Length: 154
Image (cartoon, rainbow, N blue to C red; front, top):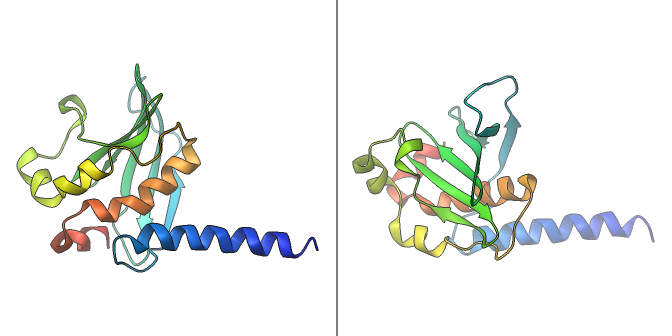
């Protein structure tokens, strides 16, 4: 009986991942998240990770910043950036504050799908821990890119 429990838990995780990606008409996307140690980006930066999708040589950087509203996960590449906020109102996507932005708005607005950004304003109605936040970011980020720019994740 103990051997069945891990199998069921693994199946539930896989089904949930397929359900998330199933809403966008894409296959399950494999990714790797790696913590970056010994990096100093300022006192408001708590942690930094690299998010790499399967087959990609260009990782996406995720920077966790502490704010008065909660935690801001700034997700960025050379060509786009988005913020996932986690606080009392839950977890969801936002535009990046100008002070944290490094990608020109003219480029960012072409690559990101504004309708999908609105849909992702509330992904979870409650706070999530870092591990869950990173998993949600990795799962939902491909939806934010306009289809002709999905290659930027690879």
